[in-house]
Image (cartoon, rainbow, N blue to C red; front, side, top):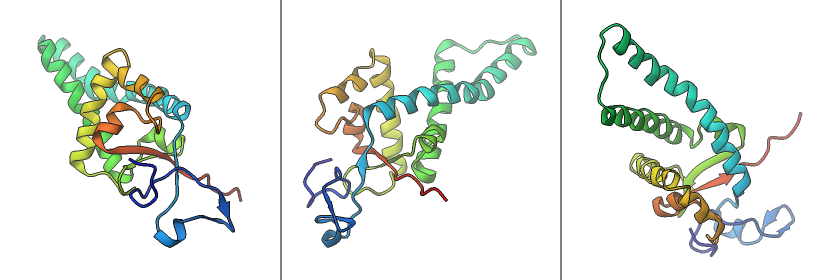
Length: 173
């Protein structure tokens, strides 16, 4: 994602005059704010709590049944592949459905394509998911990348061509 208005549909907020950001009305593109680092990290923490329930239902219970009833324990590599597939299905389904997982909905975050702000495709969602594993597993190196990135994006977002934007708050009625 670039900061230039002419190339990107998703840009940092600009000074507003008359209720419309300069340049956005001419281009017909929405001007949205990239989500802050603290908000994204808080959403990740909340997501990890939600994933405990997902893994309990789709991983722990089946493995308990296999172990107790059938006295069978799948090999370790199969368990990791199962976890990778279950979590991948969870994330990709939510990202493709409306660009938001459950925690992203709570924190008003949305995953979009960095180049034009549209919804991510299936391939791009799987790429982002696969790239997030090394970002997290290698001592959070892909997350630390956000400290030096010009737009404060995680490394897996930069490589996958995605970004997380902050949705406007709904008006109180």
